[in-house]
Length: 119
Image (cartoon, rainbow, N blue to C red; front, side):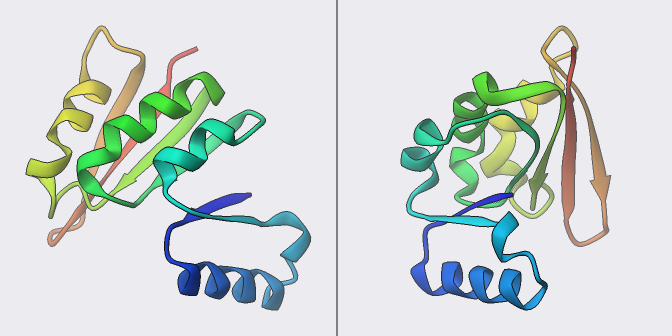
């Protein structure tokens, strides 16, 4: 698992929690801005959680797309509260002729968008 975290304090918190859970060897924490970190990440991803600068959700996804495995699941957090900010992202993943099958999960006070990359 790779976690990209811009805040060094929160990155240390992630590392601490991974160690406490016995997952230190399975979790890599990259400290930095996601738009700069994503291009240098290697490997294929079958699951991605996007929870960062809301206006950049679509940019994150577009940078990740070449690295996504067929059938990859992409979860975008806070799509209810920040609907206006993530609208370009939602329009993209919900495009009927697009690359994703997507569904919103509404929790009343917020929502998540879960999208699956079509094979």
